[in-house]
Image (cartoon, rainbow, N blue to C red; front, side):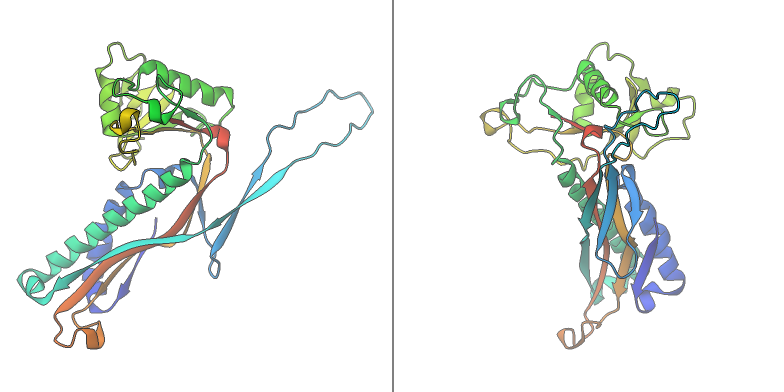
Length: 303
């Protein structure tokens, strides 16, 4: 994922390069959902992007020798995405900068990259929450979930097999991906006899890991993210927090971005008449992007 810097002397030369080197890994390591979608880049001069999707329900027919069959129809739907912009900035005082100016600017830039990544990933989750395939552990609605309705190995197996039954495509043709909160993973770890859970240290190719990957189970690779947005007090008696876990097939949704992360640092006094004594500088980061569901059958949410 690309990044660019904007501003004046604080983002040029070696300092600008230092900011890029520090900010990019932090930004990318806090993206979970953005990396798992079908990637697209917005062409210059546009604010919308269109993902074409094909209805895969058409079936082949038995041919009769020498006879041309009746033609079929392919239904192609265009999913249009309007991009949103996400970002954050902070103000640094001249007194703060006088102590360790380079370090302060870099630390602030890295932190802005982190919170921007988390906001973008949270927005993608909002899109996925519109998915129509949802299972409530032990209940039939979110509002009925109790504190004892926790994830199990059996529940994981069911969701994976529902993806298989829907012919949801697999990542690299081999596996699905599951994203869950560490609190949910804790419950899975505590279950006695957790089925075919494979610790990542036992992988045949441990170098081929996703960020935050904890292991695999029943044909899905489990990623942990503390940024999974939960539904506070949405369960029984309005006192139980409900956590979603997402089971994903390849290209279940698309993610389009306009360029990459931008880190922006402006020097003391850059605010003009609003800062006549050069007491403030600003450091921030931003990104433009959006997600859209492309294959409902390839997304399942377990609550």
